[in-house]
Image (cartoon, rainbow, N blue to C red):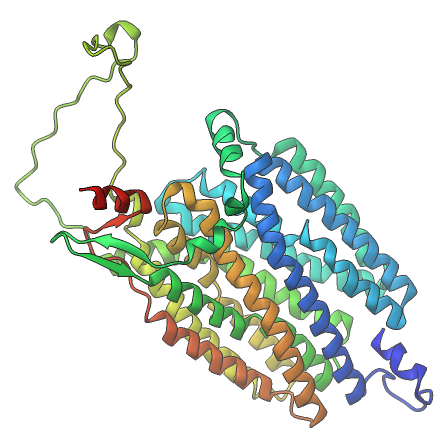
Length: 479
């Protein structure tokens, strides 16, 4: 479309080669893609608040259905924009991204992360977050490949038409099979969804928290703030990398729709495979290495605790003299279930940014098309910081704040994506004007290193400390 806009006020193309392969068109395309990316990310930021509210109000099933149905509506407007073409088509594309404020991809990913976090054990949560994101990336990979092939074989409209029918299928699947909150959980969600404070609850998660040490001293922990800031810098640095590879390959090596489809397919597929199969094993083995081998009991075997009989029939409960209704005995959770691996998760988040910066920096020296493919192959191995950060965030918060914690870290990622697509899109366009678009890779790498430094300011709470909430502080002042 930008190519059509250029020749609408310039002489027609004459001679051999691709009529759209011009420096002015590449710069204009980078600008329009950045505007589109900014509008998409901007709507995605607000979508997180609205979708989080929908989850509390309706539960995961109907929140998911609302997101995929509205995404189908947005894709139908994109079909219209492609059909019209030119500057008008670009405006339709960019303006209709506002539909994503109510329903968008960030929203349904939040729904899936929230539903999964309630179904798995805490120690497996980080790995499952990675598998879920890996599944999404595999779907994205086949979407890039299918879109590129359909665009070349048929026309540019066909990928968008196919996406529309896929969203219809997702909506029907979610309505039939996704879990929905019932009973006490549903009631708690409805009560928690009331009021403007619940709407902005994710923002409240990223605040300093107080902990009481074993000595009785009270200290403030700023880990959540530095974790969020470090992830922000990391996404701000690397979030534009896939788009940058695509734009750089198009302007420097004449990549077309098919070549870019293969590039993005390979990048997303490898990232999906890494997160699905390698990331969980790295987390599991890394936790064992980071925490040390569990101490063996040796010859002194601990005496087995006597098994207590848990009453299951009404007549087995003892009568209470005070007239209060006796409660069922509750089995205490295993202490190792909660935060035994949080230390390595934070370690992984830090060093994945270092690997990302090295690969991005090296991509700036690409002089052949195969080197761009190589960079697209290596970059996914630096992924995993987002699911690991979700694991750290959910472990540092109370169980009833888990959904808000996932919303908070996703909000940080979306905000960083919004800024990086706008800023680095402008930077890439400026460097393309002077014929040195590769300098954008070096800017990305420098910011990734800065995010790594910020993450070193994030520390886990002191061992054996207890978090003090507002209710605890009020009780403390009364004492």
